Image (tube, rainbow, N blue to C red; front, side, top):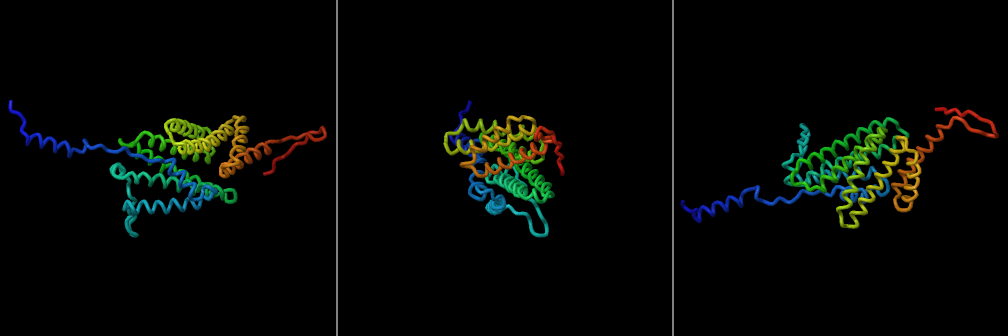
Length: 282
């Protein structure tokens, strides 16, 4: 049997070195929670300014699209660019597009929520923005799941983010049981993520996220018949009053709504040993 020559060995070595499967591909990572928390805190949400945050998201999307050379065609023919698996594999910045789009739609919904009390029709627009936010979050989750090199932590963070956005949508639709399930799912994922981090900053960031979700969980539990949840909401509100103005504002809105519902449900009062019927005029 003839032995392989040196030229044969060289050819084999060269073929192995040019084989794409032989290359070590770095894992695809996206620090979803860190990205959105830093953006929110630095661009308006520290003071509950959703319009400012929404404007920031629009500017950032333009910058990302420009750097990736994504175009929408000319003014005569609109062409929406499609984010494919191949594009994501080449550049992880493509994952930022659905994430920031989801954040922008959510911020618009929260801006409309502050105006919906005086303009009821904005409630419909609010829900449409939240549905759009969910669609972008689900697109992000699909892209991550299709990438073999996407690391487990990124996939979990994206799943938690999508669950939170679904929870927000169901919350505003007042489908309390569905909202509760989405929030509990997100809460469980963040609890698992917390066990795998070493940085104290990351742990604190996850704790803050869990606290926000816990507030929504308690409110949904109250709405589904758990009266003890109202007491827990008051406790959470008292703890948040010192260091989280935005959380305090949200909790105050929750508790005021609860108080109004309890007051409107009173049909009879006793005064000087006499029972008086109370009518609720609407």
